[in-house]
Figure 1 (cartoon, one colour):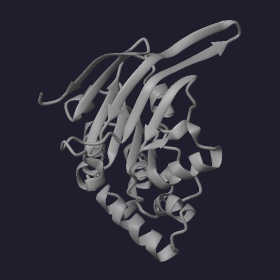
Figure 2: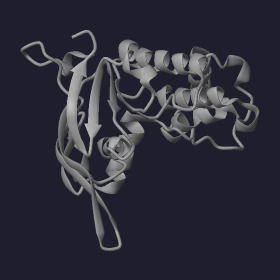
Figure 3: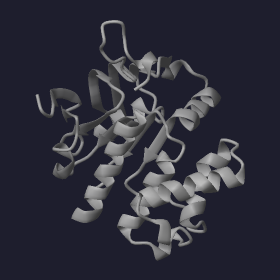
Length: 241
């Protein structure tokens, strides 16, 4: 956590703030409210977990806070930037510069090797190839994938694919990390490794890590657990308190 992320009274400055977020989906003449006035603060150097039953609005909230889905009503402040007031090109650049995304479906490119997958975001940011390759090798090693760096997705297990996706999300050391069901398809060993990697991003790099999940294994490892139901926060608790 940097000095700029601590206020004068010693408390942390929120990295993400949502104010009165509403979102509904329309099918024909039917309007289905998904989020109903969500307001919250998310803090740096923590792993925050959003849980709730299917349809509670978890993934919708994650998409809105990360700049992927516009709310019907409300505001999002991310790193002191009014996210949804940005023009599209600046919003895209904000995500590129500051956000790392981990998706349940991995979103890997079939033609690229593991190291090429991890180098990709650095290439978009203008890094020289040697520097990008060195950083990609370091993060693949941290994810236990140094021997798999030249393999393509079809040659990797599900757990290995997820760890490649995590290395790709973390290699640029983003200040904001968003994870959608990062462990739900993984066995116990791979799930624990993913949890450890998310924790390391928060603890070592001071990232704000926000995950949504059905996986009960994540709950005891999160610094904070936010419970959603019917588009509302029904409980917000810190582990250890």
